[in-house]
Length: 317
Image (cartoon, rainbow, N blue to C red; front, side, top):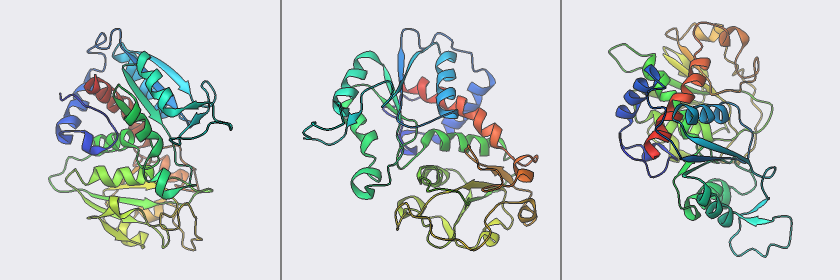
């Protein structure tokens, strides 16, 4: 195993193939090192809601013998100021640089979850301002539990799930397809999936309606189409996810075509396995018949969140 300095994107993992194999070893015996983290503490900082990320990190800490402290920022802690040089005479009570330094006094690792605000594309969201403030000011390693641009723990899990379910001697065809939603959704899961899937041996297509482009920083080198049926043809894995427009940042242009994934649409695939990060809007993003079919891997993905979290914590310590 190689010691990580931080975990925020695929570039922080020295050798992804080796890491995936080590994850399989962990999965075979997750309680192999129950005293590994003795007398060490992980701070889990949540600026946004969480189910899988929160519980999988807690369980991973328990499996490794780590202490953990949960901070629900804005509820359990003061409201943070992000602007350098700010005159703090408003609603913010503590500067994020002070919070990061103080948490570093108590924790050996800080893991933070911070969604985009969809207010400032250039200065805040695409620059991952909150996450990078913690990286800059903390004196201990930082783990991203999802940021404005990426969700590396989810994508690490997705690569592990694909590896476990692909045994044929050829490249799998992997499709990331946009799905409908009832509100504006962040790009982080889609961005991160594109970034990580480039590092495995696969043929990858990204499908989305016109107006729902992603940042080309993440999609460069991948096949792009606005035709979902074209993308799904002969697919082996289909990753379903909603996101809003990047060019018209945060907007949700009208879509006239039907992008809901159904069993009828799966007939043109290679009996494709279905993936989604959860939570999922049933019968909006994916139909019940697909989610409840044997093709769905969503619960295996959720279970694998524990394994990749455990790998990250073990390597960063």
